[in-house]
Every structure is written in C-alpha cells, then in structure tokens.
Image: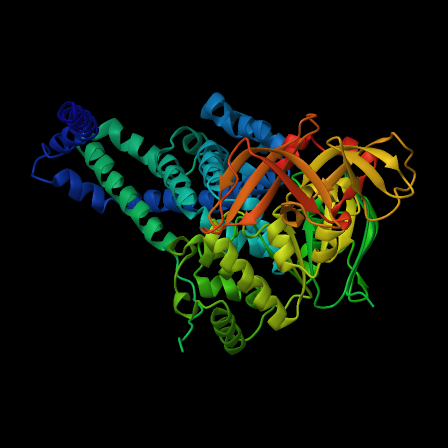
Length: 261
Length: 369
C-alpha cells in the first residue's frame, strides 16, 4: 500500500514536471532552429527594445507591488483587527478583476481618464501612472489573498495589543511587527504580481505603453524564432527576478546583542 | 493614597453589561488578583486598565493621573498575555528591548536593561534565540521581561499561566511573585484559578457576572467569604441543607442532627430552611467534645497520595460531606459502609442566606467544587 502510494506520488510528480517542461522544451527546440545557430538569441539580445521594454515592465511591476502592499496590508490588517464583518465585502471587491476582463477595465480607464477634467492619458507620466494603477487592481486578488492568509497564521490581536502596551504606534506596529510576520505571504503575492505585470498585454497595448508583452507580440508577428527565444529569455529573467526579491525580502535588521555573564 | 484607582467603572457591549459599578483602590506595590469564572468581567476590567477597552462609565486613575481616555500606547502599563504574544520575527533580546527602542533609548541603555532583565528571568543565555525555540514557560518569562523592560507604572497579567502545564505553572507563579516583590511594582493579575490567586495575591477581588462579590486578603476570602458565591467558588466546599431551630442561640438541624453556628442567625425564624457550608479541612474524623458532630455512613474513600478524601452520606438524604485526612500508613482508613462520626467547630459553619442558596449549586456538585 505504501509502495503503491509512493508510485502514485511519483507518477503525479512526473506528469506535473512534463506538463511544465515539455512546452518549454518545445519552445527551446523551436528557437534553436534559426540559422545560423543561436541567431534568434543574439538578435533578441541585440535589440535595444528588448532591454527597454523588459526594464519598463519590471519597473511597472515593482511599483505595482509597492502600491499594492501599501493599500492591501493596512486594509487586510484593519479588517481582521477591527471590522471582521467587512471581510466578505473586501474579498468580493478584490475578486472583481477575475470577473471584469482587462479589456473592459482599460476601456473604462481610457474613457474616464482621457477627458477633462481627468485627462491623465495626455501625458507620459499620467499614462504610466494609469498603467500601474490598473496593474494594482489586477494584483488585488493575489495580493489580498496572500496577505490575508499570512495574517490568519499569526495572532494579530495579541501582537498588536502587546506592541501597543509597549508604546508602539500604528505605523511601527505595521512596519516592525505585522509586515515581517507576513513576509512569506507578501513575497508570494509579489511573485504573482510581477509575473502578471511582465506578461500583461491588453492594458499596456491600449494605453500605448512600451511594455514587454506588446513587444513580444510585435516580434511574434514577423520573427517566430526570435519570439520563441524572447519568451524563454524573459521567462528566465522573470524567475531570476523572483529569486532576487526572495533574497532581498529576507531583510537584515540590527539585532540587540547581549553578552552573557 | 491609592496608586491605581478604578471608580464607578462600567462596561457594556451593546445590551450586555460586562462590568457593573466596579470600584477598587490599589496601593503602590500591591499584588491584586481578579478571580472569577469565565465571563465574570475580570479580563474586560483588566483590558480597560490597559486601554484596549474603553469604559462605558467611570474613571481610571494611575498615580494621580486620569488615564481613562488615553490610548494604550500612552499609558506606560505593561501587559503579559495568556498567549505570550512574543513577536515571532524577533529574538528574545529584541523582544525584551522592543519597548525601549520605541522610547528611543540609546543602544547602551537598551543593551544594559535587556541584560539585566534576562538575568532576572534566568535566561541570560537565550538572548539570541527566537520564541519558537523556547518552551512555553521560557516564552512567558520573556513576555514578563518584555513587559517589565519599559518600567511600567502598573503590570497587568492576563491568565499568564493558563497555557502551561501544572508543574511549570507552580514554579513560574512563584517566580512572578518573587520578581514582583523585588521590583515592588503594582500588579493586577487575572485568573480563574483560585489556588493561583490565593498563593500570589496581597488582595483578591472575587467577581461574578460583572460585579465584585468580595475584596479581601486571601485569608479573608477563604475563611470569611461574604457571599455564597465566594464560599462556593473559592476552595472546596461542602453544602448541607439545614433548618433553623433557635435563631438567637444559633442552633440548627442538619442531616436530622442538631448543630450550632458561631452566633445568632440574623433574620432567621424557627423552621426556616437554610444551607450550611463547611470547608473539608476543618472537619475531623471522630467525636470531639465542644464541637458539632454529625454521624453518617462512609459512601466513598478516595486515595490522593498525601491526602485521603472521605465522603459520608446521611440517612435522611440531606446531602453528602467530604473531608480530608492526611495519609498515615499506620492508621486505618474507614471502609465504605462504615458508620462514622465527624466533628467541626461552630465557627466553621458558614450559614448562607436564601439568595445565596439560590446561587449555590446542588450539594453533590459543590462537593467537588
């Protein structure tokens, strides 16, 4: 029985790995068909738009994560601490991006913010801000769920009250007590957000932003080998960025050292 | 002049009154326990002192300053929680030093104070450990050190030993008391454990349904309970039905046998039904001159190691009485079914009035209270 369970476990694992890696392998094999060998990769890496669009999307992703954390963490904390009865409503609101397609969202945004007195799309900065704002909305389901799960795992009532009795104010409580204890959840929310932002096509295209996904689409129209190479390279870079976030997210804080004796 | 004064404190949650007209004055350096069953309002009162709950009415004054409406982080009141509430992301030293960092003390001051406190709680070698690397008892000692680090005006402890096993509980409560005496800090301790309250406190506030039942020293609370609730809640108690024979002389009939109370039964009339409460340790086996005597049949004998608990029943079904005798291997313990006589002094009879009788549970239940 135990042997059968182990075999079943390995089967599921192998099927999962194959499901994940076969498309990657297919893409890799296809990208290597370009002549001369590796020319698709050299062409992509030498294309100035590759670096600029990928950088743009990463910056947008990082800004999205920061704004999202600033909105979601205090909200989720406050709802859990003071207004638990509001939790279903907040959950519903954060799930709306799953119900409203990005095309509807972006048309709504353009319709609202391209006319006076809110003509935000008239400037580059305005359009960039609007893109990040839209991405923040898209990140809500992932970020809220991750933070809420993290908060559920700790006794926020006692931790908050203990901090208060020691003289701490709300900002310190959030920054030094709550945030570090939901760091793992925040990181998982941040990973998902970054992955979504880097791969997001619709909003970036309609807001006419120089993001990575529209560039990928553009390349795919005329250069299939290059598009495959680009997809693999961006995949690798995104994973590397996630590892970097995880490493940076560990943080380092000055600790009180006590000498014994 | 009292150091901590609660005057006319009330707390309502919607239509439910959690605390009614709570008045208490605590002297500097005093150790006061709030004792009562779950839902009696003891934790709510403590939380009002800490600032986590706002009183519906009344004032809280600490050292001459009204703190009723101050935010919890402005009160300089240290609190120890049942769940320890140590910060999981911080080491022991960081936990203890947290309040001092908030107060922007210098690194040297924080280091010195943290070292002192870790010595005080006998954990100087655990400074760099994280809470999850410590036992429950060690975590609670760290929580105590953290609360003391800020030199609070008042120390509040909310059932700090409830989550610990029995042996650790006893040793830690002794440690808490020793530290409290050493520092002379005014302390309020919430517990539902009468033994904890009796062994730790200078005074005990017994609470029931949001009201103070009695305030007194452990000796007063245990030996002279002023209400049936206190008599029933604190210590083990036997309750037997009785009938007034002569109220002036203080004579009663219990289990069909005459007994005498310490004094007249105020407001009683011949034939009135009453309840008499007796502490088990005041009862002795055998007939003794000058004492009340009741005869019955041994119903049960429980061997508890150092103590043997004997329960006797009476022929008229008026209840059962348990009493304890020290275990002595050279003396025979009466067998079940044996007819025996017990004795107790008149002063041991706690006569409960009618209202208190209503509050008291059935004699069989109280027997094991």
